[in-house]
Image 1: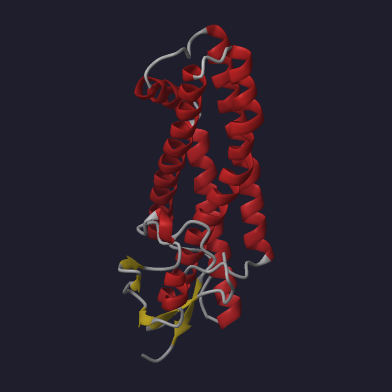
Image 2 (image 1 turned 180 degrees about the horizontal axis):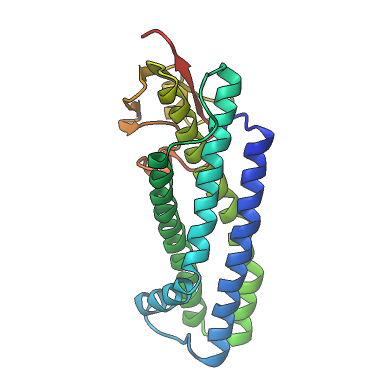
Amino acid sequence: MAKDSPKERSVIETFIEEFVTVLRRWHADILGGLRTGDIARASEAATRRTIARVLDEHRDAVTAAFDTLYQDGAEAGRAAAIRRYDLDVGPRVSDRVTRELYEYAVDASDEVGQRMTDDIATALREAWDDGLGQPEIERILSKEVFPQMESWEAERAARTEGTAAAGRGQVSSFQDAGVPGKRWLAEDDTRTRTSHREADGQVVPVGASFEVDGHAARWPGDPRLPISERANCRCGSAPVWKL
């Protein structure tokens, strides 16, 4: 979320706390499976399926964390836009947008879950191929793999999906206010992608999509964008009253 408000920062912090809590339960179950033999040496594909089944027991909690991030993030982004641009609309997103946000949350949960599952399965296969025993494997998971997920992965998920949520909230306020157009706003620093810097200032009708490196984006962080164009995005959008 570019120039995030105190509310937007609070949404990010709440998500990270909830997400890490779920991750730790999942990770504890994986370690438990290793100790009982439920998770044992197998092909990487079979290992991935086993890890995914363990995650499925926590899937509802993961999805709930993302849904809270999307719902609260959209309303925080909407509120910030209303305040920043003095828009005469209410603070709540419509029921239609709420349903849309839930679908994004489900997709984000699946995408992040698959990525983490792949990382754990790969770590296990490498450890087994190296001939490591259970104590060494547990140490690698507990000291290297899991902490990275609880820090870097959680932060990236929060920032990436948080920007998407805020962007949807911003655009919803423009649409409800009858704004005819929107402008892409990129952060002016070295961390900004070249493609997003090139999109900076681009103006399109409020219901249309921006073009970002050949991809259509309805707002910064649009879930339809490839992850390479939205991970850790900090861009935002502004209303354009005359096209």
